[in-house]
Length: 392
Image (cartoon, rainbow, N blue to C red; front, side):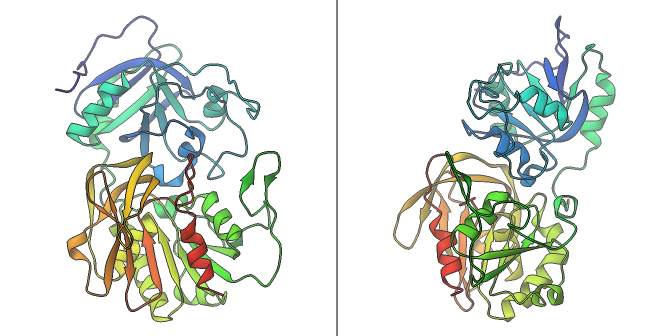
């Protein structure tokens, strides 16, 4: 039986933050970071580390993250541990108040980082009870709000939560993609980060050329492609077939991103189908995986609670090896809808949902999880080596 979440609980003394769910539940806490309110889907994330990377992952656009690990903020924030130039998650909900950072890499505390990036934090919440509510009832719409004076219009916040349309049918790739074509590594070091060295530089001009379509990409994906030996050009989500081919790619990469793949697919799928016809190798991650599935005739569906965490076991069907992966998705490819020329390559051991596919008649494959994320294991880096190796 899930712990009860109080509905319309009276405001306690000292409350400067609140979470109002579309169900009418009201959860009081202590606000930090920016003041104001934000409306979106309330989800939970099980990672014990990497809160800064999670907050800046564009795949979290439109979402408010409940962290199941209670001590968020204890290592502060720094300019290196980000996956985009700014946070895309709307806010965070945590159990304990963030403390002063205790890490030699910290450049500022979490509260200041959140405020500087206009993101709202809410502490003092029973995150175990909220997580159970999401697991049993699905991810609800909600509003997180912070007021230093503790003044809130609950009726207005409830209306905001109930009127927000939800992620299903919503194309968010256009909101988070870059606006122009660029070359990864021109304005920042291109490779992976190493303690004591920072990010590796980019060397050599004879590397195979990957054109990455940015539906809401993470920096570390491009770093892994470079580390595997590629040079990378990045184009906006709505780039057309001709502009992509004008860059003379050796291979195509489909990035992760937020929102409903069916909505993004309205303009992305025709381009992907044309790219497949060129016979050039193609690799997709997360939203890119779902879009590849749609492009070959499969269907996607909204998941009940989604997969968001850094400890998700995935079984590789070819040899039975289990990879410990990071995941962040609320939609999935329906296994039963895969066409004859698409075979399933990976499955989630949590719920058996599809986690990878490969075409039998084209050099194209994709995974639902994030092989570039390394919360400890680097089980899935081989996918970048496999893709770049196929371009040589």
